[in-house]
Image (cartoon, rainbow, N blue to C red; front, side):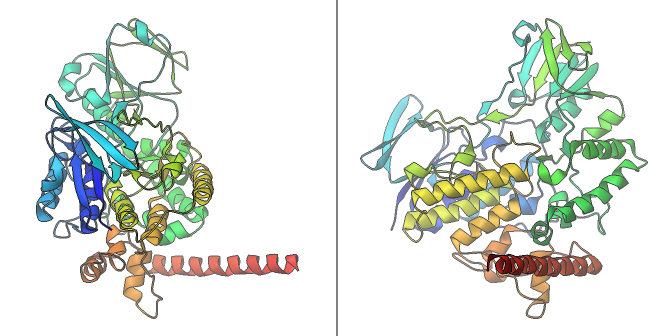
Length: 515
């Protein structure tokens, strides 16, 4: 069944939607308010020195993995080039209407009326379905802090930051820490007379390249910490591995590594919180260029800030790296938490005709491949090959998933869209019908090692199922080197067998008690 579908936004998720929906034979029209594709990575929308914190193999779509490139972290320019190549390779540009701002989306008589503005003219078109791919980064979140309205210095949100030189010679306060903040605070510290970083708690910060592995080539998202088998085992295995690594950090002779290790230990178990994957900040901290203050802000004064520990610092400017809040000004529905949606995609009462793509934040792994998987499911729903569960079942699943993710990430519950990449992708793959079959050690030992012990690349979900690319996917997976030594592989295999035996014994025991 061919549907006419509006895609809002030509960023990472919008591009995935165009590709997967057209692969399903649907008529797609994408509206992008900017003059180019790429969303937050588009020209002039983000600072030039940006480098991704997720490696290229996880930021690439599963049907176009840049296997000819070495494992690396793309710059902003390199990633935009990849997206451009992707659009050209699959001739997707023809579906994008640039400089078209979506002003209103409303449902009338079972159809969606989408009103867009292009130049001075407005136009309304009718669609069967709407896929919202506008992304998280639409409305900057500014904290409500006492006295901020009285502060006479410059106030800026990281969304508007472009260049460090405006802060030359100034006393600057940076508030909050994420991937962007690590870059921005580091840059500002190079030119400011003083740079203070205010945080409410010690965050978990991971390096781009994973230290203390057998091969330093591997990145944080291609380490054995993010393999399928480690995520199958109880958290104590993950905790045991990271505890040993953190101890090595703390004992390091390099000050910036030691400080990061101390912060990691103070932050709590990394598997229970959002992790910032950008260690750049710790060199300027070690060099004294950035002065951290942990505990939070009490109030601002006209030219100063007072912290919870009683410290008062005179400042000239504040840069808030405090994230974004959900914003859908073109919709008459209000969404405050993406966890209220089925698979963080669908408002249960509205069915599958309105979807939200890419509003999932993986603790490890990249958003593009998650958006791609969501769109493979959406395409099947649009075609009638699949259908959403009944309303009551969706409500139960939402409740279960919400409680599960809130428990798993209990240290940072405010990150309301945070999920475990491995678990979320597998759950979506089962819906799509592309969940890879893990062979036994006797049937196909090489593929088993790649699927269980290596990174959970999205290519795994092209081995089978709709639009499969079996040969290409298998070649890529088998060609990627093992990230674990054979002793560690054997150790994890034995641990998995032990866990299954214990689970079976517990189940048998419960059955006996129930008799």
